[in-house]
Amino acid sequence: MPGITDTTGNSPVGVRYQTWPVTDPTRITTVTREHAAPGFEAPATLPAGALADGHTYAWQAQTVVGDAVSDWSAPCYVTIDNSRPANAPTITSPNYPPDVWNKGGEPVEFTLSAGGADDVEGFEFTWHQDLPVIGTSIGDYGVPQPVDPYSYTSYRKRADALGGSATLSLVPPSGSGPMTLWVRSLDRAYNTSAITRYSFLVSSAAPTVTPAVPKPEFGEPTGFTLRPDPELQAKSPIVSYSVQTLGGQNNRTFEVAAGADGTATVELVLDGVHGENLQVTSKSANGWVSSAAWWSSSYDTTPTVASDAYPENGSSGGVGVPGTFTFTPKVKDVGSYTYTFNNGDPEVTVPADTDHSASVDWTPASDGWYDLTVYATTRSGIQLAPYDYFFTVN
Image (cartoon, rainbow, N blue to C red; front, side):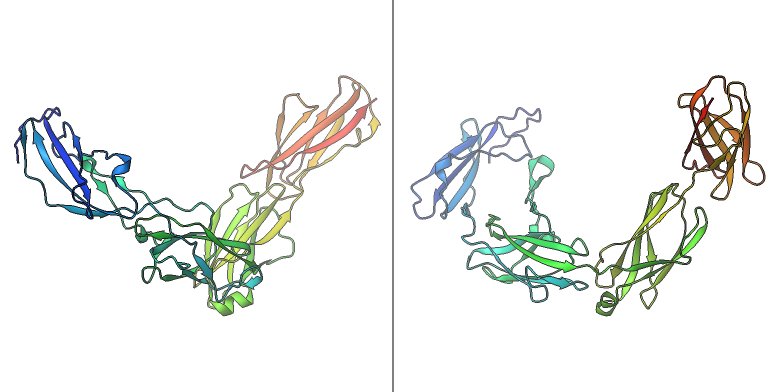
């Protein structure tokens, strides 16, 4: 083989390739890669007509330095396959019949078959319509790093034989409703078949959420009992619950372990100023995640506003006539009140008394309609819902 010591990246070394169909060794196609970088891949492009679908070709290479050439390498062989599998796969399920409502709680068992296409090596599948694409990363020196696509077991499975079948045990992405599995076949060259879909329905089986008291109070610790759907518990024990809080000061999602009977308890401080929602799903030992149960509360955290001189929705007093407005809370732990007479006026904050109420004196400078907006803030810093108190000054 000709030697070369140049390391500047402008190496005069080239690589010459030749290929021919094994059925006709006289039909040789030759291409050359000029200035191949030492240590790197040296690809060259064959003419489009040099390789025909379904034929096997031999190829070999030699290095070229000026007029000097190496011996040809030993031949390698490749078979060209540009044809997709002739038929789409077939899909069956023994425990979730298609297009009818099924009770959930167990993984869905699927059998995927090649549909009579004898070159199928395996299958791609997903619960979403967009099936994954097989790719190859390029490593150091431009060398491809192929990976067995069937190592991605969340999306692909090899058939039990060429043109054979494969079985899957899958948990749907949601606990209830319409479900569709999308499947296509792969041949040995990873050509993809047409897509087949399998649709079925899963009825709802949500846990129950029960508070310790009928109407939990704002800001007070409240216990909740989480109970599983009995049929889900019978099929596979519930091991945990996922609890999501919505509408509070700090929405979060967390896990709660279930006891041997599938129940669990959790204590929460509900601090949504207008109310709060809980969304709860159960998880079975076999991986099944139930549909969601919802529990909701609503609170009136606005303050109560009262005035003898200027009653709400009334017309009284007059310019220069003082009035006292008293603010009282509907929830516990109020530390202050913030108010403004008419939108756009500066806000004023006053501390709450020991009984969590406050009073302010106000004298109108002009007659007409007024909007007194007031909201309370708890001692922990939660700004509660505002209240608008309307009145008219004579």
